[in-house]
Amino acid sequence: MKHTLEVLGMVCPFPLIEAKEAIQSLNSGDELIINFDCTQATESIPRWAAEEGHTITEYEQIDDASWTITVKKK
Image 1 (tube, rainbow, N blue to C red):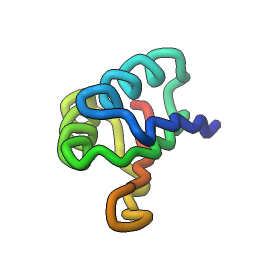
Image 2 (image 1 turned 90 degrees about the vertical axis):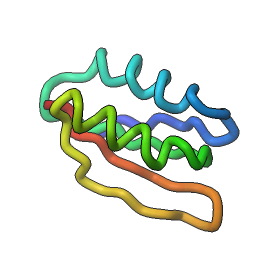
Image 3 (image 1 turned 30 degrees about the horizontal axis):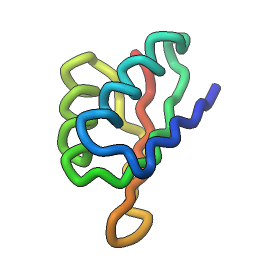
């Protein structure tokens, strides 16, 4: 099951904090699609996912200053 987290306009570290909270309610194998525009999160979200054992299934830059990343819960 896919869930979307819209954190566009949030400054770091809030996209990461929101992602950590959102993924807790998901089941193993569910995907969390995170849409964000905070540059620091391009590093902090993948690093957090790796540390927690989650998988990045998609990572794409939408435009000059926004990205989408999909994290599959372990």
